[in-house]
Length: 291
Image (cartoon, rainbow, N blue to C red; front, side, top):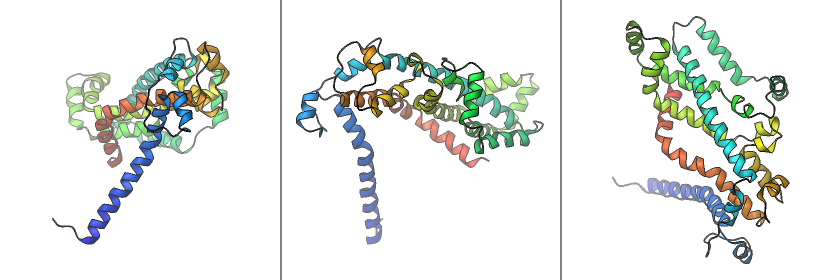
């Protein structure tokens, strides 16, 4: 089909705009990667304008990921918090969504209204801090897992997916004597992998990227997540004392440390997201069209 002059111009404009947007997104991250693997002598000689280094050096990564360093421990904390937090959040979300997907549940509308109310109005930072303090969770390994363990928005997405599953499947299993937990485990969950993957990815991104909760509830660097360490590295013109104390040797230049830290923290999400993107798209579409 031959395009008119106006359609051709519109198509060309789209390609140009999308290409520019791609460059705006890709080039900064490419620059971060190249600086993190470029020797500082070459970086200085080129006044920081390094896009294709002539030689490679991984000194910054060796310094940051050396066993016993602050970011090494923080990385382990983040992996633990993310893994445990996602499992707990998915358990709470799926069980709540399964219950609210049952249209015969007494008080169902009122309970859903309560969940929606929490999306619009929250207790606030200070009451939350006081609650966590009174529960004895400050500076513990559990606070960063529990404080983000449930999202009403994610629960509604999961509930919408459960409601799209034919009710006859649950009714036939119940007639055969299956309990509600067995129906959920053996029938509903296997059919809900797109929703579980999409909600799990949302929780994973929240847990992995969170640093604000750590700023509020954690003052012990041995329990700090990697995002808090990254913030301390990037926000400072010099390396934080906590990093210098645990590294054990003379640090490389700060700019390379900052760039390498960004790559170390961002890389897992860049690897994981393409693997679950197909399920994420399916789950989010279901959540968007169901009420």
